[in-house]
Length: 79
Image 1 (cartoon, one colour):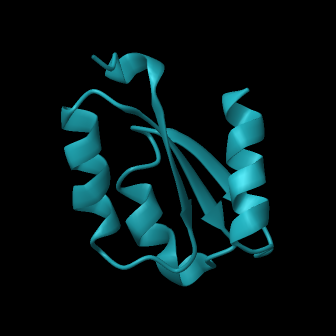
Image 2 (image 1 turned 120 degrees about the vertical axis):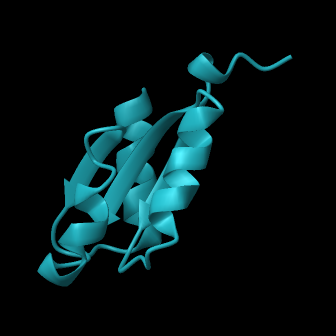
């Protein structure tokens, strides 16, 4: 059995839509720790990140460096 508090969910995100918020909330209900990397989405998307960034481990990577860099940043944080 997985202990969800010992498992991170890493979400690299670039210009997300509103579906990010319910996804994060569902994962939080399952008691997962979440690392969310904003990969340079820009101010236009701040309203989405603002809804969840105080509930997760939030990393704001500016400027956009690509999915691979966002994943490396999140893995480094988890270590």
